[in-house]
Length: 134
Image 1: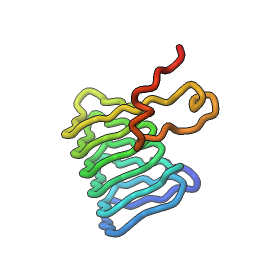
Image 2: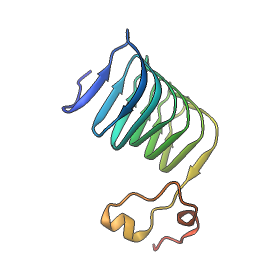
Image 3: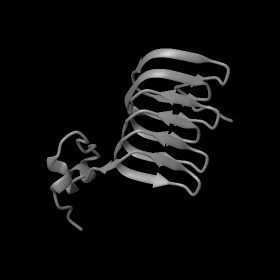
Image 4: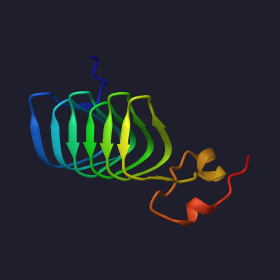
């Protein structure tokens, strides 16, 4: 496995409890219990990884286990991934074999947000009812 520059890594033998905030990328092969908030970042829960707690990031990829609510611009659950919690996202992908126990709330990015590269407000209801120009 090659780690990307400016990333953090929680190894398979580690258990960390607390709150993780900031920007950048995080790969989790061990266990993390607590809040993760990487608004402009990416979180990869690797096959041996376990996350317990809410997770907010721009991109989330789960090949291991995640127990908690997720708020992300893009989320992928891999073939071995398991998620238990509610998901709020703009883009969602579930590979064959992956599992989700919870609800998915799909937000709609407006045309202006897509053009400007601004993320939609996943917490606001008005974005869900807006029509997107095609």
